[in-house]
Image: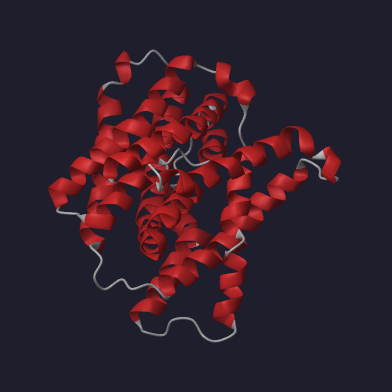
Length: 308
């Protein structure tokens, strides 16, 4: 317990600060609401890719259980999707709302996951989460687009459009570039490496502030059943499946702990954007995201203590 609170407490205090800034302190600082859109794009396209590239390019990956870890991350997601599809007729919610529950159950908030793993497990945690991001982000992006278009009946983007979207995703590109530099033994060159490292250090604080600023308390009325179900499945069900998958695939030690922690992170804010684009219930999605971030302040410490 003594090591958990110092590692996780600052994460949720920064998220709280972001919520307070968005809802009361903005005017006093001379900031407008447009600041948050710009900050989120800056973090997503510049700061976070710089951090991921530097960490993967310089990490010691040779001894890590990369393939078993990838299996332990993806198998629970597929099981969760399969279970929800089987139970779909018993869930009292329409199709757009069901797709929001799906997204809220499988998409990880990479800012919270990376901050938590780095705070708890140091450099090893950072490296393992970067690998998890490289595996899970493209995996769930494709799954969510395919599921939403098929269930809602919107235009299917097709394999070429999906491949193009993945190939232009800055998060995926930065992880892949870092892994290539690592595998070739090049690492990061002088000047450029330290520059990217400095830029990347701004990613987590600004990203967590944006998570807090994105909380939408007015959306909490948008379907209580869907919000509760998605929250329980994402914050408790998915990490439990991840723990079982780690046992099944022989994932141990810090790798197993980070795998479970990554699965226990609340859902990604980008789920809201996809829900709006493809006809999902974006109000329900906003409610799910808000409740999950708040609830994760309690569930993440409990899960970490169970892993100690």
